[in-house]
Length: 240
Ligand code: BJW
Image 1 (cartoon, rainbow, N blue to C red):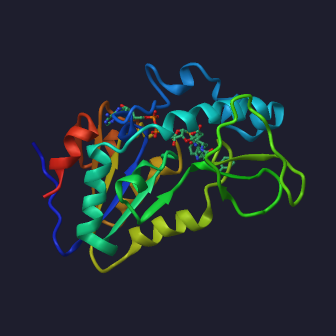
Image 2: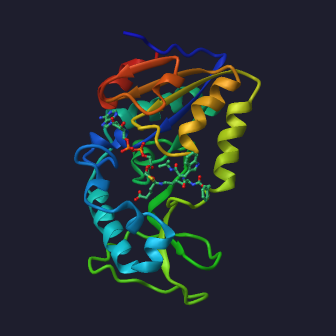
């Protein structure tokens, strides 16, 4: 089986998706048993869905807060945190996950591309997001104390922009000239942009690209190496 060798001249950019948290008991989005099977995505993960029925959206995210709060990191999360400890600033993790399990496993250099399940912000004004672990079982919708607008989960929904500073952090890491880039995507279907395009960016700067996933992803052919299987089983031995 392939192993990914890192030395002093390499830097590692890891992109993670829902598959990494699957072995911790968090549901993925697509495919059998995925979240979108029961929830119409446009009703719960778009600004239009929130405008139409904010209580429904809060019920959906409250259930997910409650489920995620009882989950623990798995060996995949822990392997990624260990790579960071070895590589220091030659490491960056960009995650599409909103569950906070990477940080719980000890990861610090983390870009949360799609926001955080445990953070809330105003849907209307620029008031800074704040930590919020509250579960609203009835989908109660609170108002912003600054502008009286509705509060919403601090998550990037379809049709919304990812934070420019997050994308810049990833881009700057990719474009560094001091070391050779290795890009590793794990547990992601490669269906959602712009993250699905990171592999192309990595190749443009001469990076080696790896994918670890339970099933082939939409963009598998863009990668130099594809290791098929469960991240919690593969990541602990993948990197030498
Ligand atoms: C395992 C495993 C195990 C399981 N081990 N593996 C360019 C082209 C086409 C479209 C677009 C484009 N650019 C933008 C778009 C539009 C859109 C988009 O991408 N649409 C596509 C669906 C076509 N993108 C956007 O809207 C983005 N915004 C944007 O680009 O702004 C500019 C803009 C503005 C206005 C108009 C247009 C553009 C924002 C996207 C944010 C989406 N966020 C979501 C929802 C969050 C809400 C929530 O959490 O409820 O984030 S979408 C959802 O998918 C979630 C995830 O982070 C994201 C990625 O999913 P992920 O992680 O890949 O999970 P799955 O379930 O898909 O896959 C899991 C994989 O793991 C599977 O392959 C399994 O096999 C595997 N697996 N167990 C290893 N144990």
